[in-house]
Amino acid sequence: MSRKIYQNLIDGEWVDSESGNTFENLNPADTREVIGTFQRSGRGDVERAVEAAKRAFHRWRLTPAPRRAEILLRATQLLEARKEEYARDMTREMGKVLQETRGDVQEAIDTGYYFAGEGRRLFGATTPSELPNKFAMTVRAPLGVCGMITPWNFPMAIPSWKLFPALVCGNTCVIKPAEDTPLSCTNLVRTLVDAGVPRGVVNLVTGPGSEVGTAITSHPDVRAVSFTGSTEVGRKVGEAAAGSFKHCSLEMGGKNPIIILDDANLDLALDGALWAGFGTSGQRCTAASRIIVQKGVYAEFLGRLVERAGTLRVGNGLDESTEMGPQINRQQVETSARYVEVGRKEGAKMLCGGERFGDDARRHGWFFQPTVFGEVERGMRIAQEEIFGPVVSVMACNDLDDAVAIANDVVYGLSSSIYTRDVNHAFRAMRDLHAGITYVNAPTIGAEVHLPFGGTKATGNGHREGGMGAIEFYTEWKTLYIDYSDRLQRAQIDRPE
Image (cartoon, rainbow, N blue to C red):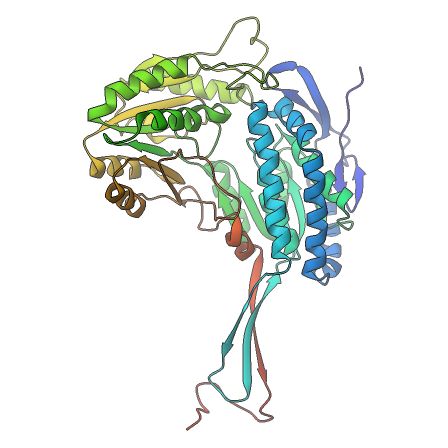
């Protein structure tokens, strides 16, 4: 059976890489299955893509924003029609269960509808001038060519977070998806092409980050870079972008806490902890790998969590009964196993899981057991470092102040959560948790597309995706003064009496 070959999109044409080199996209649930063959691109392919985007920008920026938005609207309607097809493609290449991949595609749909609406907004401001017969206002101007580097865990949702706002603002784009999940981003880009995006406005280049990603971030004609991935790589992206004063948005790691107080609804908290800890096999930047439980309910909650985690159905995500799929690749499984050993050596108590599945049904995939550690101390590495796997640490706390102190005692600050029935505790936590996102009586995952998404400290560099945060990133303010006095007026000097 012949394998499908996928190409780069450059200047409106689907083309092979200059080198002719390719790589295979494998199913993490069964690595014997090749999803497709993709282009292993290099700097020359990026050069061509950026040049195409640069040419297209001059016409695209002059296309009225409502017209740009109409193309996004058509693309979104096509995504709705193709939702099930794209969700199944995503499960095959990424592994997470169908319920989650349908949600991933739906998030792209929601993002498309939101930013299509922005085509008739993109608001600036009008304001009084300090001088007579003078008018002042602000408008948003596009940046130019935007480079985008996206991760494998949300392989359609996150590309949509970047592409849709950039396009409606009048920018052109060069996007590089993760090597592990190029198909979902290709499906999104193909949908935009089918909806009528002009040639050169969106360009897709697949390949390794060390070559393609570096070429994008260092290219002098790329005026903005949006990156989602690890803190280690994000730091390099930021350094490269700073050399040519590019706008740079970095969305990186997390070590997100759920706080459960004595007065919490434990049934609700348990459901939330399982979903946040083991959804997407723990492979979310917002995953809750730390659960901080007040001592009065610690033993009960921990026992129930271990029982539920040990019975999760782990397998191929295409099976509707599966509750947790595989990890994305060998490296992620090895990372989970390594941190299990670290936790044991640090003195934490492993209460379930801790190994890769080796049975016949799962031995060809990257399946790791849902793992729970108890008796975890706040300074342990498993309580401090991002694991990005189904490994959850449970810690005891004395009270709310102690819980917040433990929660804040990490280098990251993306998402956070508290379960309590006390409104005073809830509001104190919302004020005092050092995180870009806080949920009350809900897990650390579940962001909505019309609200800003991002974190503090080592999680990011201050920019936000989603909602108006994305519009802010993909535009620059231009201030306009129109003097109709027919004489020279010097601000701050010629003050009217």
